[in-house]
Amino acid sequence: MIKSFYFPVPWEDIRYLKEALISMELPFSLEQPSNRLELAAGEVAIVFPDLHVRDFNAVRELFGGHGKRYPG
Image (cartoon, rainbow, N blue to C red; front, side, top):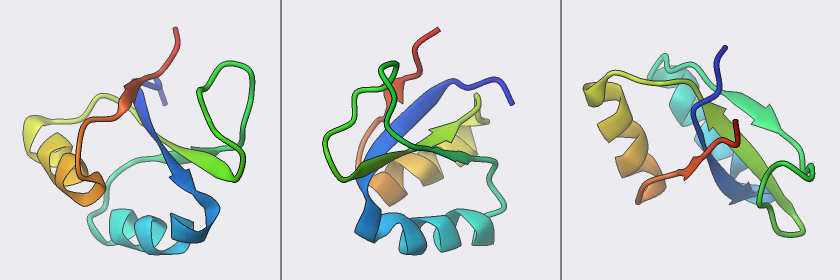
């Protein structure tokens, strides 16, 4: 998967978000903190490839905004 953007989220929200993304059949991966990603303590990144506009809008609605560009 070519990583395009990500959302930093608290660990306690992972289960709900993961289940929602699986039910929407969207590709994603989880990444733990690293020096490449801007994550606060207690956060994990949900990473996405480029998505079709419809899928991107669904993700944006689920997360309440735009994600951060994945460092290239």
